[in-house]
Length: 141
Ligand SMILES: [Zn+2]
Image (cartoon, rainbow, N blue to C red; front, side):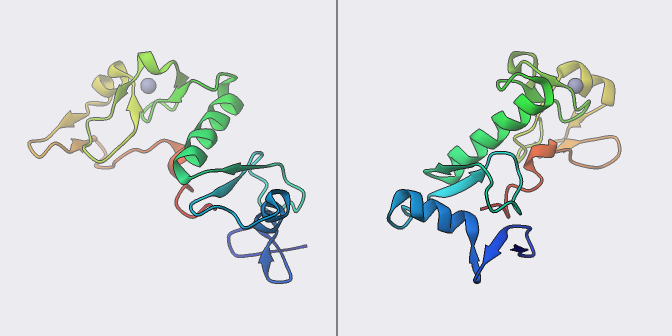
């Protein structure tokens, strides 16, 4: 089995996961629908797949799978600063205006993170921290 540059299994020039989804549905995928590789094994032609109605549901499932795999609780979220998984009630939205990251208040204070006048967040090292699960969201089908 071949894989493409994104690591997805391909056969006869077509993405195997998309062909399998079409076969199960017995019709073309609805507009906006996509498939999630439950175990992240894109190159596996027999990978467990979930057909998602849209990207938002795909992101939600992927986030819950990552939490489940990381700490056993699908409802947990990762602190962008200390990288620990915790109950979302113990985390706060990042101060960065474009970030959807969550952070412990204590971690933010300990890290010396402050918000500037334009609403962006300044981290001591000058970087914006995103949780690891956001890394490959954009190029995944
Ligand atoms: Zn933290």
